[in-house]
Length: 284
Image 1 (tube, rainbow, N blue to C red):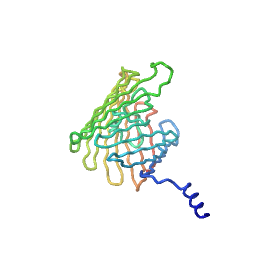
Image 2: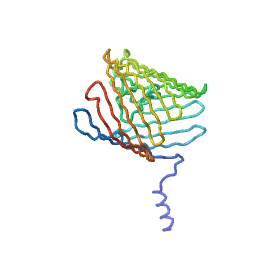
Image 3: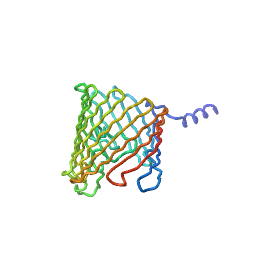
Image 4: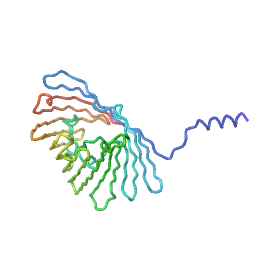
């Protein structure tokens, strides 16, 4: 009898068996920065981790992740099958955002050249259509802000988006658009093209009416993989209501297993844009 009771108690506290495969990934990045006419500062670039679970049920692949980015948590669930992929969650991933920043290759960001909606989307659902033409990818998304339950619809906004990309040989071209109900005069678009051949990568991108400031951004990125790391150059031109500013960065990285080290020098039209950076990051 004692043995039976002992087995029953042990079974009650045993961990349940899950069919899903669970993994933990993340990355940590730190850098020293020295801006013009300023002292040296320490910066945390990334310090985050992601827990991912995946399994297959009835021919449908299911993936869910929870991501913690320096104390901010979000996540999503994806279902993939013959219908394509449907992804829903509070992680920012509108259709247009899924194809942007092809020119953002600098290790230390020059600025935010990504396309964005004015409304902060509290929940987004994105459908990636099944492949109909080799090399063609089509995304469509529907998102909404947090809103409030106050019997008025004046503070609830919907964000719709679509994007297409096509790859042929070494070249990929893309176009995306975001329609934001909150500020309809600032609907955003992104157009880009990239080329990858051997160790060389070139990306060019233009975003228009980005956010609520009527800002257009063009960015060009070039990198060369020398085997143990990359040499990279990135430049951006930002036009806000006719006023242009320019920023550029050049640097080199060196990898040692999962560790990436880099040095980078930035220059721009204002003193605050000019700086030198030394960083290290580790991905696991």
